Image 1 (cartoon, rainbow, N blue to C red):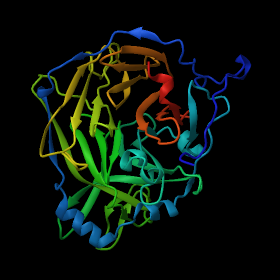
Image 2: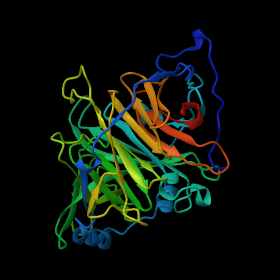
Image 3: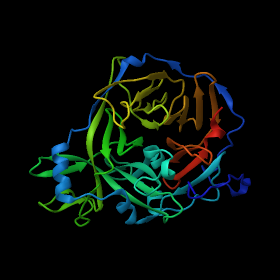
Image 4: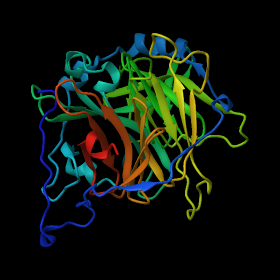
Length: 399
């Protein structure tokens, strides 16, 4: 099977509802005002994939790497099924994290991508022998505290493997080639895209941080939960994590529009070989921009899964919607998830916009291509105790 299991959405009696879990069906959809075009030439990226080469080479030599299949062979958390009370139009499949991660008030899931992003439909979407769902998280120093670190979770999603997942800490290399070290990355990690061997993680005020999935490092699980980095020439701690993924470079966002982009979420478009991003803006919130958000498309360099040293956007849109936590694009079509409005917006330049009822606490979106079954939209909810990771058939939300 290309996916672990497929689930038929059901409508539940009112007495069986759990707050926040049952979603109003997508139909009937309503027409909506759509985006307008902005000058794409105003938005550029500067890419540096070699920012930490010297230190990373030393870290690899000292600690050694673990391939993705090795990490999954040592997966140590059990995912569970969606609750029976969860229903959304077009529901295909999904899961929850274990009870500890589902109820953790310090860590929050944000971005989502899959091995189908990384490699497409070839070999049933397997990367290093595994079909995977990857979720990015940020962690606070206490419940309601400041952002302290970020991580990813690799979740096995194939019928031939157990229902397991493993956490990997994201780190930034520090020190020198002689004394290599690393530190936490305290970003929101609001979006993530996996293309080829490279993982792109949204960095709200900057652009994206880049990681190489072939360079997962092994660390010592000893020490205390607050220890991070080099302890001696051969011992490195990472808050008791067994694996860390070091940053290899930075993709810096530039604009001549006068207002810097807020990189709230990103997604991969395999058809046009590009990454799309959008901004979370809010008309009534403190601490967020109160302006119409934008969505920008940046193409990869020809024939590779990396950006050129300088990249100019190929598409730029001004959006009429707010509270956007998720974006996806595929074959000229766009989807935007508004957590605050509980709406999923679909738009194409030719057909215009359509609005669907959606869910609260919704986050990023990833498009799942399938050669034999319906294409899917993978997404997730961040709310404590209600962290449903699920896929819907994209045809349910295509206007």
